[in-house]
Length: 68
Image (cartoon, rainbow, N blue to C red; front, side):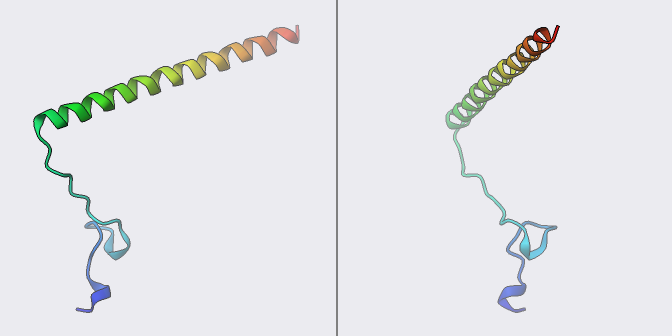
C-alpha cells in the first residue's frame, strides 16, 4: 500500500474527506461550562433573529402605509 492510498479521512469519504476529529477528554465541570456557553450563544442568536424579523415586519408595514 502506497502512502497516498491510505485512508486519512473519515470513514465513508475516502482519502478526500476531512480527518476524524477526536474530542479532548473533558471533566464534568468543563463539559457543563461548554454547554452553558452554547446555551447562552443560542439564546443571543435567537433574540437577534427575532429582532431582525420584527424589524423586517415594521419596515414592510412602513413601506405599505406610504403607498396608500
